[in-house]
Length: 234
Image (cartoon, rainbow, N blue to C red; front, top):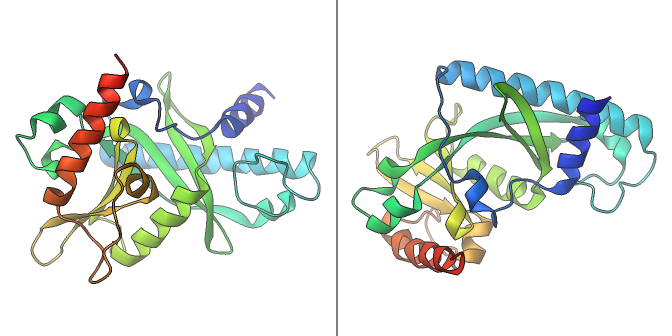
């Protein structure tokens, strides 16, 4: 089963390394409608996860092997895991970020990558990463347990029922992920820095309020990090 073998290799290899911005920093051409993209990515995530689970429960008994990409104590627990929800990933061109002539929200563009939260007993255990490969939607990696837990908590705190007021933003060259949150009342946009951003940009959680940061609080740390990483790449 070459499809499963390929998927397992990618699953163990990791999940969209933040340290490889050159591979994913470019926004992808998206010709299909947003709904068609959502349906295609979601169908692929469901199909591939079903195959992944079937293979794992048939070939592993007992504790999950070291380096297993999803957080389960026993591989058989995967039979109760499910794809919960998905979202497109947005990014910002580093040159545009450094120039800073527009607001962060206006600079964000879709990457063509979708990620899906995987849950077990309603608790996140990892992410599935889905993208188009030779024109076909496929799951290319499983993993990112820390991000799955952090992101799901942020979604619970800030997203509406349809998650239409939030976007996931990944700045590859700053090794940072954010949840962009739009206010239903004012339309103002603020950001919840996820674990990677807090680590990379040395951001502190706000002790009071909703914990969201204004774009003005992020721009300078982001520019410093992007410039440093781009300079080190040359």
